[in-house]
Amino acid sequence: MPRRTWPIIIGGCLRSGTSLARRLLNAHPRIHCGPEVKFFRDFYNDYPEDPVRHLRFATSARRILAEEELLDILGGAFVRVHRQAAKRAGKVRWADKNPENVLYLSQWERLLGGKWLLVHVVRNPLDTLTSMLEAEFPKSLPPTLDGCVEFYERYVRAGHEFSLRFPKRSYCLAYEKLVREPESVLQEWMHWLGETISPAQWQLDHPAHQKGLEDPKISRTSRIHADSVRRWSDRLTSAQVTVVWERLGPLWLAAAEPAGAQADWLDL
Image (cartoon, rainbow, N blue to C red; front, side):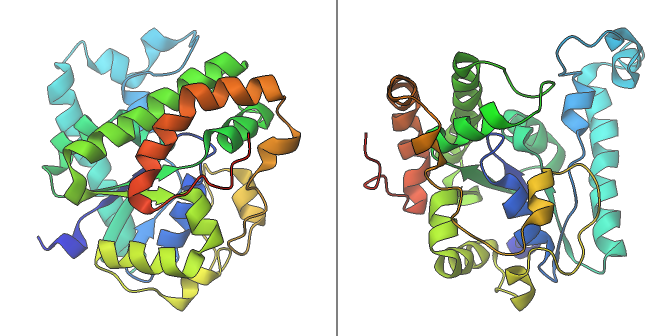
């Protein structure tokens, strides 16, 4: 299977720009990237305080088959869903977008056998945490700053460590660089994927994207913009900025550096 037909897996910390990445791919005439399907979270029942955890399908099915066997069967079906959706859309390639994909990269490796590409979306932790604290996702995001710091570190470190192990199959999409230099970044990204830019990719809301699980903000966005860069500057206290940057700044710079991200604008 030629590399330019390999599936594309998008992941990164929540509120980092994975929805923007998904729409840019889905607008391409060769790539289908639908709204989120929480396959792995459902499979592993990775939800806090689930009162009916023992009744979930995957939990019950583990009493019939071992987990790895079950993953092969259900994961294989999930891959077929993606292939069929791409075929129905008249496209030759599929992509899966879920922020938590970075937590399940070994599972993707098992299902796709090394013939797939990771797009790790990273964003400055100060803006990411600002957005996390403002978002109303109580079932997905921690309510405290310390919790969000740990959450960000877990996600970004998982994606970064995979990129270090498999650099030829990993692309770091730095949010700040994308929104400031969209033409050059999109050109580089598509070239890495073995694709060429399509004019349709500059219109994020046209043609219509499938309705489903997605950040509601992206539905009101028609173009790439940098309006959300440095939102932290009037929302976080100086003490919060210091804590976040000391704990997460080096990790973000290490993860984003391959994409040419620069932090020289950051004024602490």
